[in-house]
Amino acid sequence: MGKFLVIGGTGVMGTAAIQAVRKVYGKEAKIIANWYGKEIPGFEIEDADHTIFGDITDQNCIDAIKGIDSDKFDTMFYATALGDVGTPIVDATQEQIDKSNTLSYLPILNLEEQLDIDTIVAYSTFYVIRHQLATYGAMGYSKEAIEKWTVEPGKSRHTCIRAGLFESTSSRGIKLLLRKAAKNPENLKDPLLKGYFEGKSSKEGIKNFEEGIFEEEKEAYGDARTKQEDLYEAHLELFRSENPVFVNVCGKKIWHTKEPLLLKDYF
Figure (tube, rainbow, N blue to C red):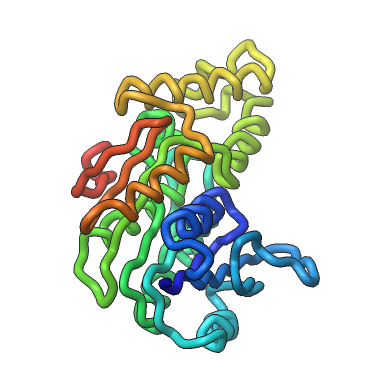
């Protein structure tokens, strides 16, 4: 049977997690899914047994989760994040990093402490490739914090799915900010980014930028263009594996590693 908690159940990763739980554990599994945004009265997350609307940084939301049945879960998937992107990671201020960690990282620690969870699954990306170093901003530090947490012992067992570029809130945010910056390419500090936009329309620059990421990912990891179905397969691989640490997925390639990506090795 099993009991599962999905934080960020309407997002790409949260959806993949719910689909994988249903595939592996069937209809008997109990899934509690949380989401937050513009409230839609009566909205229910597909395939979840209980939908909890609320800000996971608010104790009232956590109490609502506890109130469904009990505070014990087999697995929690923490699939939500928010932080400043669109600028080089190295240029992120401490204020921006703290703000990003408020939703992207710190609630994981709080939920681990307050709930009885056997396994916590967090999410990261390949933020150390050249294109991400130039654009991932404060989120880069939040993802590094998650990766460091993954390899630390805790009350729960820690694991992480690390994914290549896919369409998400963060990727859309980066493209939006780059489109604005492209109006004055001279303001782009990074020569890699500047080369994509000088003498080109913002639309063409964004397209070339994305292609650049895919090319770099394929060269570094063997595949690229990660899709929803690839994220779903990565979750199935996590369930099949014994004590996984990092389950990596880039395009259709899925593999295991045990070491975090450390920004100090790239600055």
